[in-house]
Length: 484
Ligand code: ADP
Ligand code: MG
Ligand code: ZN
Image (cartoon, rainbow, N blue to C red):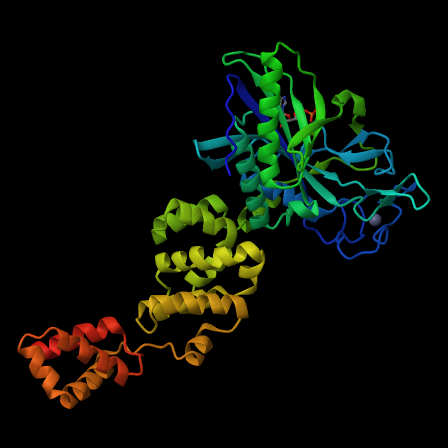
């Protein structure tokens, strides 16, 4: 969905994304970082509850995930980075500060290119750093009246990566595409599951406008609480319009934080923006500076899987897929398709891509994990049966759909439904010979110029094969036989 926004101003967007990293334990303690299914406050210890005297220990895996992300976007990774305390007081943060990274982040610079309806957009990445997640607050109505707030510290201390772009994105669509592409990258390298509905990925957008040619950036508004990629695009589009109107009316915008109300389709004021001075950042005294060496960086680089951009390029170049097919398949079924193509003999890639887009990806819309539950080898099998002529193209679609829905193997569905066609020339010839011998009158009619007779004889061959002869093969061989 592209939300059209027309404005005479130049749009400037910078995006900050927080993602929970995929680690077994939390950032600075050995508590489990799996929050799903855990009773409130069960995954806690003195460190993540912020009890006095508890000391943090760095989770190496989390550091590796951030470095891998940085390497994947071409960031620089300095040898020495540092931890800092970001101070603020709120019940979601029992220590009174969050351990984060301020002026020496793990990754600096980098770019991520995204395809938009207006062409390629290069998004400059400013930095990626590591910090800890905060507790989850639940606000409820109190049984006797009034409101009640509950705190669940299970989320407190889960490793969190923050990735910040330069103020270089020029449309709501490009910002959404950037968030989608970053998610795909993170899932591909295994750094995060990045499920937005689960709160594993949180996108904040800074939006400002300025007159074309102006040398200074305009006043920015930070928008939070967008729970889907669609909301990211809608919220930014709304802000562009709201700010355009305000500027047109001669109003001065104020730097503030706004929330996105998805139902109303509008942003609302949350609070005036705090400046970083308000957090009194200072170096974390309980953790030494973090050193990374060349060998560590090299081994992380070597372990990176094929990245989405490279895979898309390869699918277009090697398999002849259209840019759109390659992009859709890599985004939603990359490993599945790779498994299909990895079978021997490899199936026809374009037919495989066609079946996958038409049926597999359509089914996956209603069952999000479907293609991770079905082996790509079955797609390969159905494509091979179709290209060898063993089943018709219509049967291929029917069988593939049934396989996806039931989980039954392609081979057993084809057998159970008797869909296998007879395409083997000698088997078809045998049937043709039998039909010719049994119908001399029709043969004579055909040879006397009655085209109708060919239809009759074709029908007899199909009948004799109980409908399983490949119609194209029958038409060709019968024609040849009769003209001999
Ligand atoms: P903070 O420290 O308050 O989070 P930063 O200066 O680090 O602020 O910027 C946060 C994000 O806001 C970055 O993605 C940056 O690109 C973006 N940004 C900064 N200024 C603007 C602006 N005037 N318009 C749009 N985005 C901006
Ligand atoms: Mg920020
Ligand atoms: Zn803990």
